[in-house]
Length: 115
Image (tube, one colour):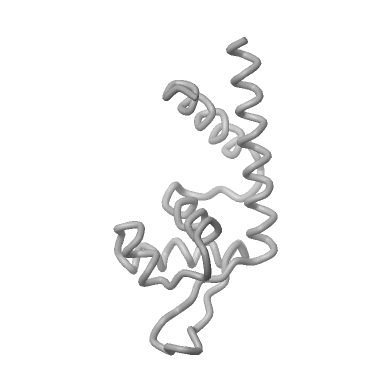
C-alpha cells in the first residue's frame, strides 16, 4: 500500500471514530491502548513510559482515562510490589475489535474510491 493510501485509510478511520458518539481517545491514549493490546504480556507503567518514550506521569494520565472507560485495568505486580501491571479487559477487547472493523471499512472505502 502506498504512503498516500495509508494516509487516506488513517484519515477515514479517524473521521469515522470522531463522528461516532462513543469512546473518544487522544492519540496518546490510543497509542498506550494499542501498545497494551499488541504486545505480549501485561506491560508495566514503567515499561510503557520507556517503550513510548514519554514520562510516567503522561502514561498515568492516559491510563487514568483508559481505566475510566474500562479499556484497561491496573494491578500491583505480585512479584514486585513496586511495579504496576497494565491488563487488558473485555471492554478493551471489544473496543479493539470495533477499531479493526472501522479500519477495515475505511480501507474498503478507500479501495473502492481508488478503483
